Length: 183
Picture 1 (tube, rainbow, N blue to C red):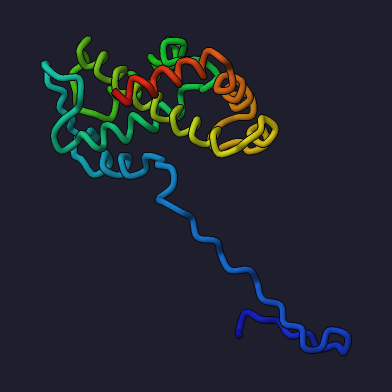
Picture 2: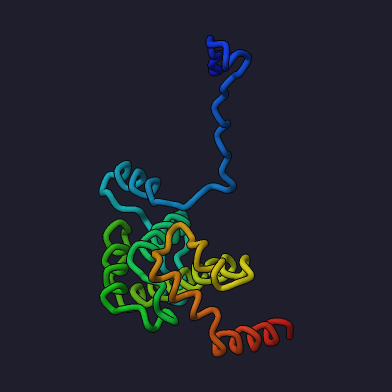
């Protein structure tokens, strides 16, 4: 009862004002990459180890999770969602992602490494778009969809995505993909 405030005046007698309880968040929240920065500071050379085998297009080993986490943060920071696909993302954004990924990790700067980073970034971008489409499907009308903008998307990007997800070519592609997935 320490948080309650009891009014002394006659007109408010017996009224107790309690603050609203804090709302609990669902899930862990969006990653910001702080743990990667901390790990880099704790390493003697300031870089994390990641292994990209020459015969595979993925990072492996003990630093693989940190690699993907950092890449997902950089993809979110450097790409916009007002384009139809990863191919339409600007080359400048892709170069910035490459530069950011080559800096904190102890990996060789080869064409295979660059291709692997961009391949993984493409998958992460598509996964993010899939989550945005799931948010889009929660609402029945276009007006509801436009009013409920996800946290990490600008209004301009969300308007583009609502139009894109509501377009006939996207709906045909989605229906075709559902049929193929069911096979």
